[in-house]
Amino acid sequence: MSYKFLMGLFTGILMGVTAALMYAPAEGVKTRQAMREAALSTGRRAGKVAAGISGRVSEKKDRIKQAI
Image (cartoon, rainbow, N blue to C red; front, top):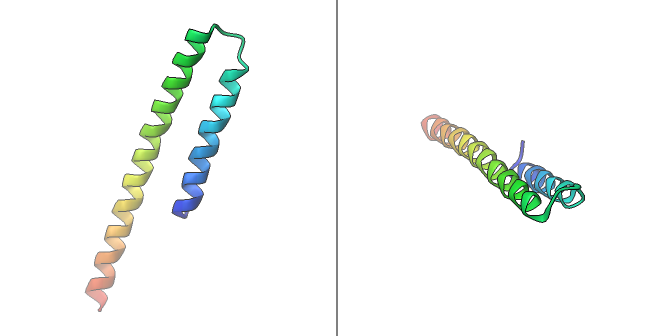
C-alpha cells in the first residue's frame, strides 16, 4: 500500500469518527472526550503503520545496496 493511500485511509477514518460523534446523542463533554480518545487511538495506529512501512523501506533499501 502506498503512503498516500494510508494517509487518506486514516484521514477518512478520523473524519468519519468525528462526524459520527458530532451527531451522537451525548452531552458535549462526553462527545469531546470520545472524539479525543478516537483521535489518540487513530494516531497510535497511524504511528504503528508508519513504523512498519519505514522498516520495510529500510530493508528494501539495504537489499538494493547489497545487490549493487
